[in-house]
Structure formats: C-alpha cells, structure tokens
Image (spheres, one colour):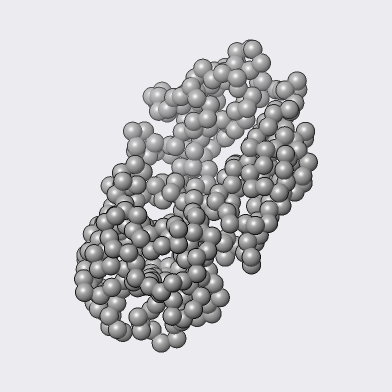
Length: 388
C-alpha cells in the first residue's frame, strides 16, 4: 500500500531546501552537501541553487545511498537552463560502468526527464516523462514501491515500470548533483536551477504527490461563481515574478500584485502575466457573476456521467452550481439495487466513486438532493452513469 499523506510527510529522511543559501539537511539526519559556492536564486520556496558553470556540482553524503535500496520517494524542483544536449541532474555511478547506477537526466531535444537504473547490464530500467516547458519550475518525483518504479512530473504520472528483481545500488560511490561522473560521451553538465530536494523512506501514492505539488506560478483558485457584489481573493502558487500584470483591471483591488481581490460586476475572464527574468508564465481564471434576484432555485445541476479512473479529468461527482444552495440537507447516491453508496450534507464535498476505499463498478446510479435556496425547500432526484 502507498503511504497516506500524513505518514508520507512524516517519512521524510532528507531535505535540502537551500533556504538561507546553505547546503544543510534540515532533517538533521545527514551531513551538509559538499560543493562550491554557487549562485543563490529565488526558488520555489525561499531560495534555490543555480548551476551555471561547468564546475558547479554538489555531492551528497554516503549515508543517503542505502535509502535507494528500499521503498523511497525522491522529490525535487528543477528550472531548466540552456542545455542543448543531455545533461545529468542527479547520478550515482562509478565511471562508465553499467553496474549499480542510476541517473536522472534532462533531455533538451525531447523536452523530457529520463531516469535510468541498473544493478547490472541485465537489469537495466529506463523511465521518461514529458516536461512542461511553459513553466518556470517542474516538479520531479521518483517513487519505488516493491518492484515498481513511478516517475511523476508536476503531480501527474508520466511513466512506470516493473523491475524483474530488487535493484541494489552501490554504497561506496557518492550521489552527484549536476555532474554525469563521466557517464556518457556527448552529455554536458546541467545548466539550470534546483530547489527542495527531498527524500522519503516510503512510497508515496498518486494523490499524495498531487497534493504535495506546490504549483509554482499557477493560479490555484478554480473557475468560480459568485453573487453580484461579492468578492473572491485569487490564490496563486509561490512565484519569483518581479513583474505581475492582471488583465482586465476592472473589479480588482490591485492589478499588479500576486493575489488580488476580485469584485467584478459581470462575468469576467482574468489573465495574469508573471515575468521573472527570461521566464514568463501566463494563466487564467474565470469568475462568473450571478444576480441573486434572477436565481433559478430549481435549476440544480449535476453531471449525467463521470469517470473516476484517476486521470484527474471528471474524477469526482458533485453539484456543479452549488452557489444556489443556502443549506444542503442531504446529498445521497444509491446503486441500482437501492444501496446507499455516498452521503453528505456539505455542498463542497463530491463523491470519488469509491465505497470504503474500493472502486465501484460502472453502471447506472441515482442521486437524491434536498436543499434550501432563497428560503424555500427543494428536492430533486435523477440517474447518472459511472464510466471507466
């Protein structure tokens, strides 16, 4: 079983955050990273470290190596530089031998992250996942559960592979950051920045990894609906932007701050431009404005189908226009035999398509909703489909 979010966070055994521009392990379990005095930059959280010279590299203490011989989760943020050929971000290997090594590389032509691992030439594993070059920072997570290895980018599963055996890595060779240790001809040293390098001694699940992703430079507030005259404060992930521009400015208390308060008098699509040196991010948020006097209390909207398959698209079932509800007395879902599979009195909660943690079978289901709108009571019931 994958770790739950609480136990996942508690399982952290290494944390190089580079805050205060130092190389110390904030978990207190390992020695400092060894390396030259590299440039300190604005990172995902506080500071990060820039690798912009062929001599720049960091060396991890040997005490970390053994954690890769059991279930683990390795997490870090990377900001891409101007590499034109493959570049190693983090590696453990001795010379050019394909014997007990792993290597996490950036492949600029393919715009992918690549992970190669082997205990011997007969046990070679290779994972790869696409990077989002429109983002300033990409979040990379490599997780091992038993014989399974998973590679995530920005909270999404990019690749997975099943090993034929437990891989054991060298205990006498240091893990190097931003140096390929003479691995492959044609590789260059990594050019870019790193932040929040963390190691956990358990395998994190997909939901843990999505929740742990900080979404830097992205609008976190989902498209929303408010009543005329109401306000919403726009939440944005951490950002190093020194130039911030929201458009249109109408309804915003300040169009040049990261998280303005919006009080639009009509439905508005807001866009934001975040500029940090050469990195420019654009994102949008739609705020729908409804006049309470023209509210259709009988027009409660629920989907006719949903697909709880873990792809982050249409994965939950709930009330779409919940803003019309003043008080939700009950929201219940039943299967075709009349067995209740879900209930809540919180309009913000949706059903994830499971019963007791187990996925339900596809088919027809029935919802029943009782609620109050503008002082009047309403009750609706209808059927919908669960698809896989």
